[in-house]
Length: 235
Length: 232
Image (cartoon, rainbow over all chains, first blue to last red; front, top):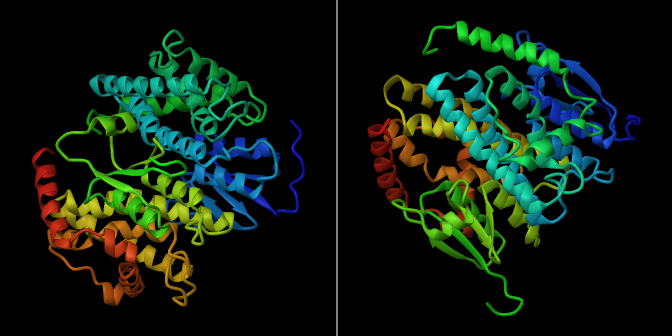
């Protein structure tokens, strides 16, 4: 997909790391809007002065720097991108206030409910892990229901929107989690729409070009899990 | 419901800062609404129907359609009833900043700060107090910047806006938090801008009307803390 030169809206930089699904969110939004930017890979073990200066409160990535001014928190950045380049299709945020509130609700759901479950499954063992699996499956069933109600290809409708970006960015991790733990989290019989949506999203223009390499992700995930498995129980 | 008449209901609980936030928002916009008090012991059928996933207040029900999550509700109120007082800043960058700090307030400030005092004892509570002072320091700085060095009254500048409403609702718990933590926050010496800002906000009709009696909050907070410590 051709990335146009950015409009006279200034200079855009993105601080990130290659594996982070939160960085992927921002990259997807920038790609969909055709915004040209400079990507700077951060080393989280040795955070750059720019990163610490741009996000002193959380010291995390992603950080979007627009004409030198930092915007932090991935979904806040995505909405900022939408508002700043609002005349560029696609529209990532619904126009109707009610639909917008629903989209924001699901975004919060992904980060407040789905996120911790993914972490719990990845890091947990035994009963703790099982509980996280059950909770994640229950959360996915809600999302399946939301897709069924919308009846469209994406949560955002015919095109990718806020919720697709929020959840879709974690799709790779979900697939990797299934491989690394040997647990099927999105069963095709129980959640056909969600499974189909995920495959569609990962193949979509604007998404597939910015996804981290799956083999590298798997290696990265396996390494973290091995490190945790080696640690004494209770840590 | 008459023709053309809007129906606005809020499922609420009087001590909840999140519910207080929504009610202040509606008052600021002069929206007529009905507040329905949820009890603590059990959840009403209406709450479960309107917020099946989280089963929590506040829920705004606008012409029968539910909106959940207080910050999302606040933005919805601002967008549906724009009126003459926009909660949100006019440019995307300032909007992003307002959302960032509101998120900070609901996560770090509330979770590690306020709850670090209400839900903890001993050294853990002392740590909560240290975080609280650190975060208040950050917010004092933010207020200085957003109020153009104090020449404007609010986080929203001239406008009592999104971030003001997002933060003020937590302040009605401060006295209870100080009492339960057996300490006094050095407002005058360390956070004079925040102190002035709180006084100004409390003078607003909306805040004055919605804020619960601090003694009632303290009573509730004591029970809340006892209950929490007993089961954890």
